Length: 242
Image (tube, rainbow, N blue to C red; front, top):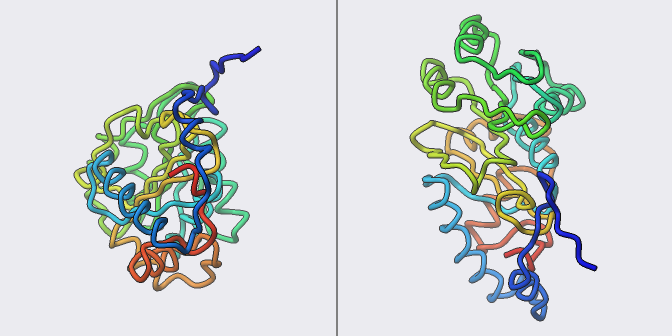
């Protein structure tokens, strides 16, 4: 008996999607794959109202959160913590040897723009990590108002986990000035887990050039090189998701 999923994610996948995912496999270095990726990428840009670079990662969202930290934190990161998944930003930063502070509120509450303004005004931070919608508590942070605060600090890289909001809520990435926004496809996209979508600004890419020890698997510059040179991903893609 098929049991429907009524959890935040993975979510129920429609039969017609599962049918399409069962089509014969193609090579990840083939012209067919390059064409497929070239068709999907602009659709994601349209969804996110962005002209930023869109990369597809065969990983969970947590992997790309780590990638964002390794590419975009050079000095010190402010991690906005209001639940289990926003706390993960902080844990990832520390685990990667980055200097980081947690701006923490009681679970069930949102991060307020004035809290961020007060911290960023110290000049200690070159990056901030925020969860748009905290799955563990159901609280959505006021992204619009927080983005307005970030405009006062153009030197700060704005990283957003939109795992449970992307494709479910309107997010105008370019207008909001988001430098890195990521999401796995197992929630509002209603696809099986295994693929993470990330949009990266030119500002974030230029910063990554100056950040050492970015690793390889989640190096934004490697993603961009493969996309520019071959219209492909650096490593084997989860082709069926596309």
